[in-house]
Image (cartoon, rainbow, N blue to C red; front, side, top):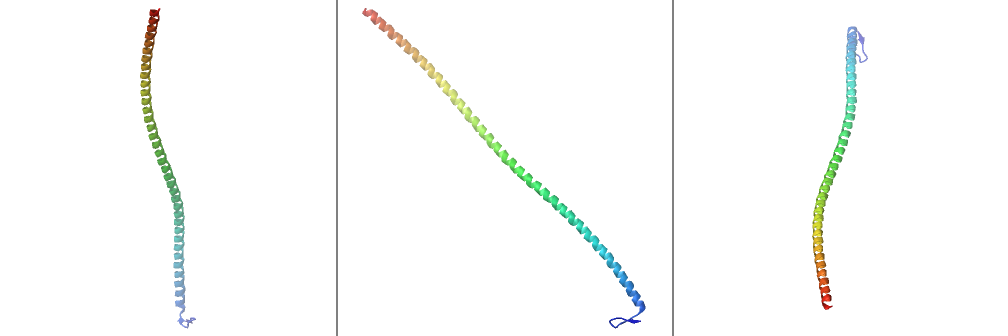
Length: 142
């Protein structure tokens, strides 16, 4: 038997058991340490995957934002096209109205020309009558 530092007596057999126990405990702790290292490695891989996934998500979010901007541009362009179409239709309607007014003005002009020609013809007839009458009166006076 031997005396330990705290004053208790220890036997030689117990010392061997204590060493074996400590070795077994050390082996258990080494295995536990390996398990912890494996867990740390797994977590590091998961973190890398997570960072990679986050980067992919950020890229996807950027694409979504770009798509939203493109869709907004398309919407505004469609609105402008619709406005242009409405303006074109309005101008066509105005042109049709102006064509009708022009045709009506041409008809009125033609009517005025005919009336003018009639008046001119009647005026010529009147002048002929007047001239004939004047000639008749002059020849009568002679």
